[in-house]
Image 1 (cartoon, protein in one colour):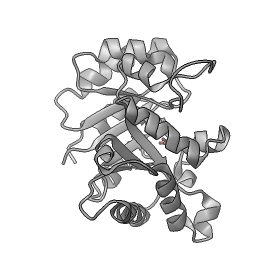
Image 2 (cartoon, helix red, strand yellow; image 1 turned 135 degrees about the vertical axis):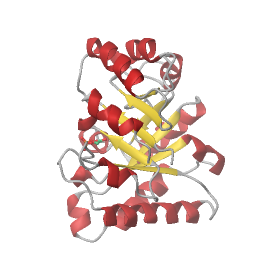
Image 3 (tube, protein in one colour; image 1 turned 90 degrees about the vertical axis):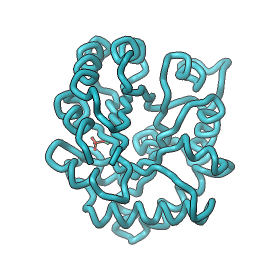
Image 4 (cartoon, protein in one colour; image 1 turned 60 degrees about the vertical axis):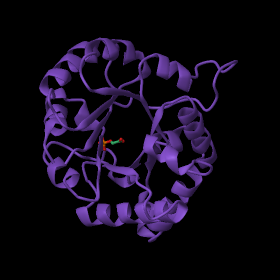
Length: 247
Ligand code: PGA
C-alpha cells in the first residue's frame, strides 16, 4: 500500500548539507511508490528544489504565517512558499504550540491561509503526558481537531494530512504502542465523520520516535496512511530505507 512518508528536520542541518542529502534521497528512493515529503528549514528550499528536481519528492515547510504580506518582519507567507516550489506546510507542531505559544485559533487561521494560497497542510495533533495520564487524551485531540478545522470545507480535506503526534513520544525514543496509535487514530477518524460525514476521507500519519528499528510495524498499521519522522530523517540512509519500503 502506498504510504505518505514525511521528514521534519526541525532546526537541524545547514543549507550546504542539502545538496548531498537531496541527491542521495532522490537516488535511493527512485521508483518508490510512497509519497515522500521533506520538510527542511526555510533556508534550504532553494537547494532542495534544485537537487530534487526530476524526482517525485515534494518539499514542505515547517511553519507558515497566518497573514499574506505587509509589515511583518521575519514572517514567511504561504504564497512565498508556493513560489519557492514548496507544496506542503506543517502547521500546529507541538513545539510551535508550546514554545511559540501558537493557539488553536492561530492554527486555524494558518490552515485557512495556506489552503487559500494552494498550499497543502500537515496538521499536527497530540496530547501531552499529563493529559494522557489524566485519561483526557481522547477529548483533548477531538477538541484540537475541532478548533483546527473550524470553517474548513469537506472538499478542502483532500489537501490536509493529519499527523497524530503524542507529545510524550516526540524525540523521547519511546513511540506510542500500536494499540495506542490505533485507538487515537480511530478517535480522530470518528471525529472527522462527526464533523463532516461517514464517507469523508482524510489521510492520517503518526509521528513520535519512529526510527529504523520500529518503523515497519507502525507504518504498516492499516489505520495509518504514513509517518512523520523527526530525528531519524536526518540520516539520509535511514530515511531512504523507510521511504522506499513497500508497506
Ligand atoms: P521525532 O520527531 O521523530 O524525532 O520524535 C517527530 C516530530 O516532532 O515531528
